[in-house]
Length: 274
Image 1 (cartoon, one colour):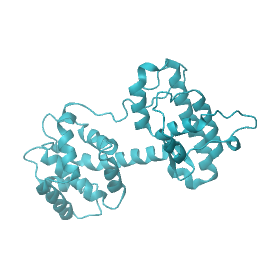
Image 2 (cartoon, one colour):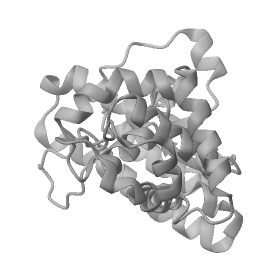
Image 3 (cartoon, one colour):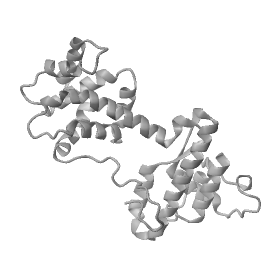
Image 4 (cartoon, one colour):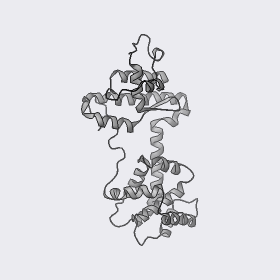
């Protein structure tokens, strides 16, 4: 199956989609882990003389997961496309979106034969984070009645959405919310938001702890209160500083973490990437 991925890479490289990338150095070509040779391709397939150089260009936009699953780095790819957008022909974007879809299909087949690979699939992580978002918002929404005047009802969802997808903090947030410290971290979120006046002034920490206890049943309300109070008084930490930086903008507008990334399209010639 790894050879099938390389065959799709070969097809993509033939389109010269990465022609606007800077030419790699000799050292980069030698160290490049992505290699394509005649053993990976159907018999008789011509191997371009510059295939190693093209592989080194592509290697900047991919990563291997579990040694077998190749995935695109959408952030780096998006930056490359944005920078060179005006140089591409409209139908060229079909090449990269088609490549992405073919990889998904290959990965599904691989996971069907080796279930252990499922954790590396794109939709596996997407579903995991979606479920995490739903679970956390369900808990935080118990505090909905205490939102300050002017704070829209969807704010807590939008805040969590941004927290789980913002590249600056998402890794730390996901690790804590998927691990054993989820409830403590949710208390810290409530404390930070109270500090940022998302909740009413006359709403105290006990009110918030009491609300959270409705959906957090494995921890005593007193412990929830102490966790909220500790973070509220600290006024420090990565969560506090990140929230302080984004809170004013988020209060003014909704957040869409997927804007500018891939969109599904089945028509060649559509501009699939904005």
